[in-house]
Image (cartoon, rainbow, N blue to C red; front, side):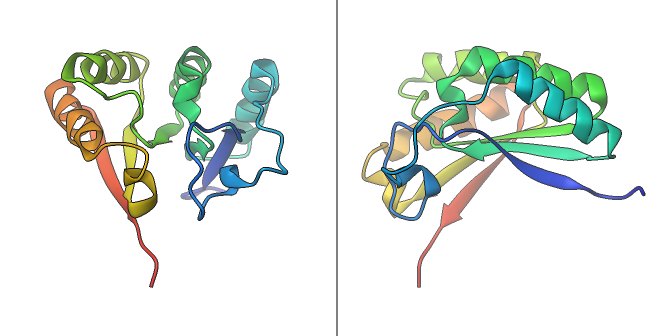
Length: 151
C-alpha cells in the first residue's frame, strides 16, 4: 500500500509548559521520554510500512535536541518527511533561535511548526515566535505557525 501516510510521534510527554488543551498538562502522566533506541526502531518499522511523514510532537520535543536531531537524520535516511512541533521556548534571542534552526536544518528537518496561542503566550513571549520565523527564513527551513483556538 502506498500513498500519503503521516503520523504524529509523541517522543516525550515532558513539556516546559502546562497548557490546558494539551495532553502534556495532565499531571497524572509521567513526564518522560521513550528510549532513543526504541524510537529509532519504531521509525524503522514505520518506514517499512510506507509512512511518508512523521511529526514529532506531544510534549516539547526540543527539550531533547540531540535525540530529536538523531531522529530527524534517521527520517531523512529513510526518506520520511519530518516535522517538529514546538512552543519556541528556545528562541529567546535571535542568536539562540539561529543556532537551533541552523541545527534543525543541517540535520535534515523538513518543517518546523511553531505553536502560537493564548495558552502558549501566557508562558512564552510572542517575540520567540517571531525570532523562530526569522531564523527559518534566514536558513531556508520551511515553517508553519500553528494557531490553536477555542470557540
